[in-house]
Length: 93
Image 1 (tube, rainbow, N blue to C red):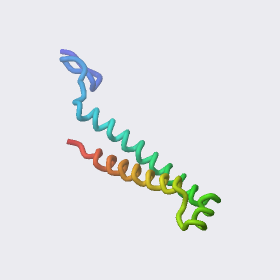
Image 2 (image 1 turned 90 degrees about the vertical axis):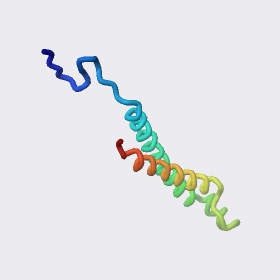
Image 3 (image 1 turned 180 degrees about the vertical axis):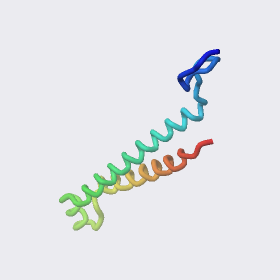
Image 4 (image 1 turned 60 degrees about the vertical axis):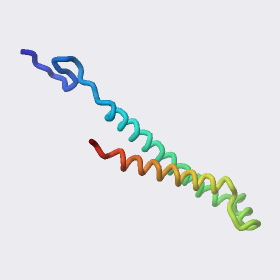
């Protein structure tokens, strides 16, 4: 009678994870990375909106610079996608 001390061993050899578990871990990691990147972009966008160039652009045109808008919109989109992926990826089947 064999005694197995590791949970990754069996009589047939090492236990392999099903593909959906590996994909779930990769999706969760990618979602977390998107969430963090989105938050960082939003912080940079807020910082850019308080810059001198953006203030002058708002004074002249009434709108902030394109860079500020791109950072804020891109950060919001990345953060939303990351958050949805984290919430959706936490479900196990």
